[in-house]
Length: 169
Image 1 (cartoon, helix red, strand yellow):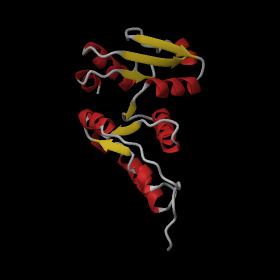
Image 2 (cartoon, rainbow, N blue to C red):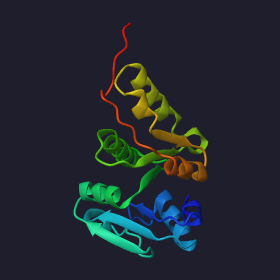
Image 3 (cartoon, one colour):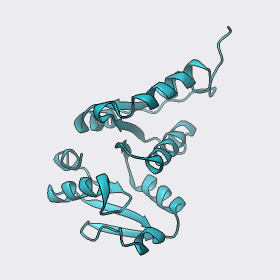
Image 4 (cartoon, rainbow, N blue to C red):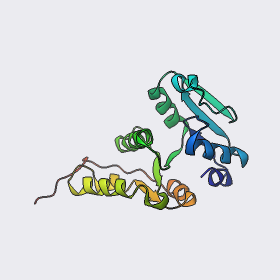
């Protein structure tokens, strides 16, 4: 992912850590010439997980500030396989697009089908009338980093008059 970002002349905004998958992505993006901005809360910085070799590392007070700043600085969101924190950040970004708080695309990098069950949950929400199909269509699932970036490049937010509409059964 980091190489694909750099190859397109894009930058990376992420959680600021030097460990795990995102630490590897940040290293690859930096190595290939991309600007990399990390945003890390003080509590994680105190645990010494902040990445010291990126373009800029911003330290904030809370996780809420981190997510807000990441959203402000980003043009779109690519979600890599991860845990509950990753899912939290992704769903919040999607919700903000759905509500019109921002107009930024969201694509899940669906490595080896990792996110397919989430795609199924979103489809189920549409079927049950809790998510509008047009909102569901705003979320991309891509097999490669390049396809994820293509999805963001082609993203257009939609306006829907109603959140969801339950069909007559």
